[in-house]
Amino acid sequence: MGWNVTRIVRRLRDWVVGLAILALTLLIIAKLENGQALRFSGTFLAVDGDTLVVEGERLRLEGIDAPELGQTCDRSVGGSYACGTDARQTLADLIKGRDWECLGTGRDRYERLLVTCRRGLDDLGSLLVRSGSAVADGRYLAEEAMARRDGKGIWGGAFERPSDWRRMQKLEDVEQMARLRTLLPRWIVNWFEE
Image (cartoon, rainbow, N blue to C red; front, side):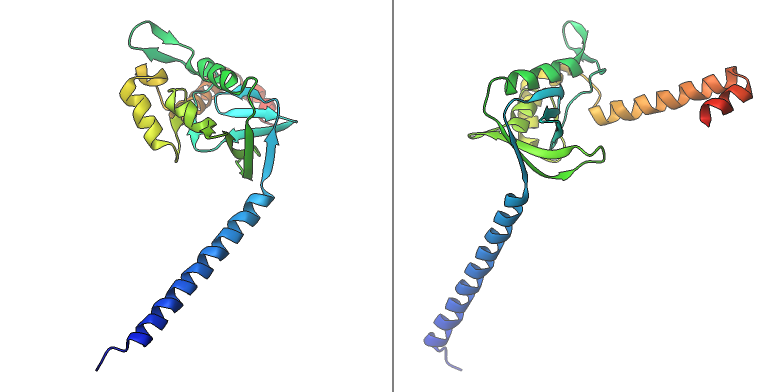
């Protein structure tokens, strides 16, 4: 069986054309999805370390998780500090007077629009994780590794991951309610549950 060079060239050409068509189709789909995304720019307000408000819309920075406002962390030197408040301040400083554009299509369980925010080549989520003001939550793992290595922000001491801290807060609330139920007469507990 001999190799027919013309036949091989045609098959190779067909594969190249097929891959080019597939790539073009994927680009068109990406462009259509991007066109349907909600875009925001202008003056943003930092609600906490990973949530913004603009034009009445709550925006959640996708791929990061910042300490909660009531959360404290420990520094290697200097003791406890309000790391949730610090995270919000870092976000506020980054967005202050700058031309950020936030783009998102999905929503989280609290109906906040999940967004990525960019200004030129800067990515807001990346800057927050790199500064040690937030942990990576699916993205920005390299930035988290750098912040951890350099001991920046929350990585300069001990802290609970924000998701663990929230879970513990819910458990404490449940335990407090259980203690309250044992102290109050049954009819008062039933009245509050109705």
